[in-house]
Image (cartoon, rainbow, N blue to C red):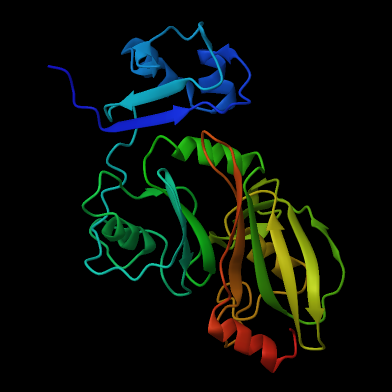
Length: 304
């Protein structure tokens, strides 16, 4: 008995699409993993203009390409089994067939850590999508006390594509933070990050098993006590911005781990996603407005 098709994605190749082999379209242009391409070939689940063709044959501008997936091609097909929030309060900044970008509030977890946990962003997205054929699939996370733009995939096919675009630096994630002290200028911090030997839950520059980490920074306003800084991730290490800022001598205001002397709420906001859309690879700039409390803090310290 043939398994039911769970995901059916259809794309029309652009008028300026150069003729290429179907293999190159799937692998080099669309960045689909070899595992998925293997199943598409083996099951003849890739159709061009309604018919199966081998991956060595050419595709051309205006062709319709269909991708069919049963679900077992995905290594973790049940990864989206988040208990849906019944009445989710979700600020959706952008949405298309494959993904959405939400404005995560400070104090909300990105995803459950134990089975059955509720109240996280992923629970809210699952509730928002309830009744459709879509699910909530993790692409990246924001720390509990970090607010701002966060990408969530609606099908697992695009997760490895989005991860590749993030890893290659094509999807840019930008943040603003209020930090301690007077920070001026712009530059790049290129300090490797690993586990903190004193507490492996946290991270440290040149910690255990350190990996390369790069952060671009640009001071937007600098006062005597506080500064407002714009940050762009070139890599995506755990707690990267928080660790780099603390190591620079300007920890984030309210950071409960890397600035424990501060008794305020953390002020780190993902203000922008330079998004690249799977399949079409169109670029979209998605802006997450600053929370009211963040704006009020900037006024208090004259950092506008």
